[in-house]
Length: 224
View 1 (cartoon, helix red, strand yellow):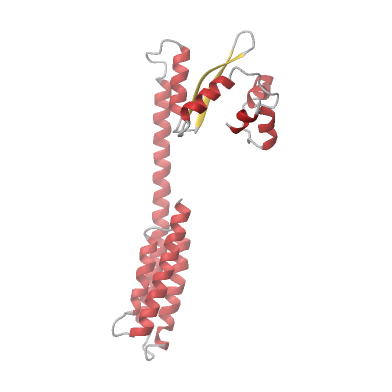
View 2: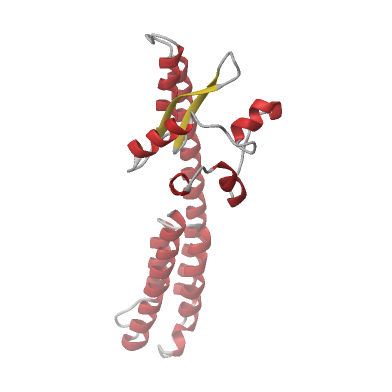
């Protein structure tokens, strides 16, 4: 989304530079100062990445340099210096803004993690049993950490019981019911749970067609 917004500002900036150039050609210096080419650069610098600012600054400087061709040979030095210096400052400012945004995002993420850890440390407070505490855990995980989460408990006899399932989205109730029902079915050999129970450790898997084909029981199960 941020990339799309950046490209949109790039297009708008280039269009503004082109429009200013057209007005400059038609009217001449009497109505348009060539230093106005800096305005689109500054506008883009407040919303887009430094590379986008540079892409807008390049034609702005070029047109400001070429302006004397259609403005009776007027000296380009002062407006050109203004556009070049302003563009350099705009690119630097965009870099600083981007760095500040990244720093704020990192700080926000760290605060969310600390809050999550604090909340996770309190899941047993007032809980009737461990089952209730673990159900609270999936409530913490979804949607802040994951789109979906479920907890399977290994039983003393070696079986697995699905204790809780949470899903974020418009079909939440249907998908949670499906996940809970799936917890009582026999797991495929390739499933992450089966591999973990075989002692292969934590699993990070990609749900490709091979794994999906190994996991599904029927067409409805595949669709869900």
